[in-house]
Image (cartoon, rainbow, N blue to C red; front, side, top):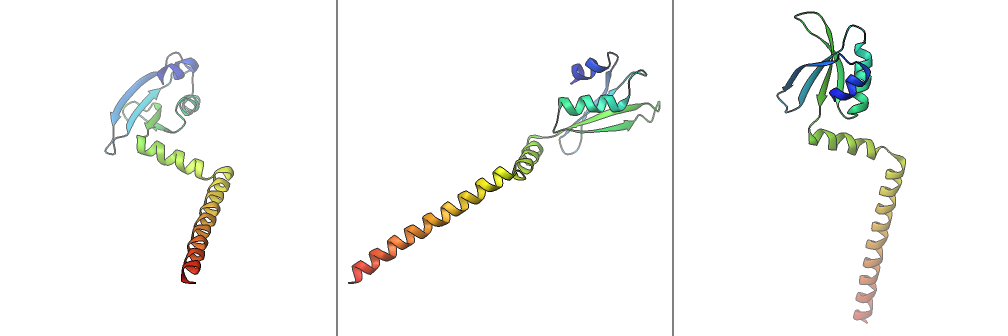
Length: 121
């Protein structure tokens, strides 16, 4: 992650690493005066697409920092599942599976009903 930031800004440095109450790792990266926080945020979003990236201000010295919140495994799964669920091909495949399963159950029921009719005669 720091390598991605240093690709854009050689003086970028990590100012904070910690874990919040939900178990997500929070990392703050400070850019040099020559680079902007927006550029740093873009680089972090590109390096970690599922992470939450935002700007934060250091209250001690007033400097702006890019803050990266690394999602947990459950967060990543939930985001990927939601993203995939919204795709048209996935919706069509899901609909096809439902139709085929319904047709299969109807055929099994029809076969069972036919065997009952034959046994009754």
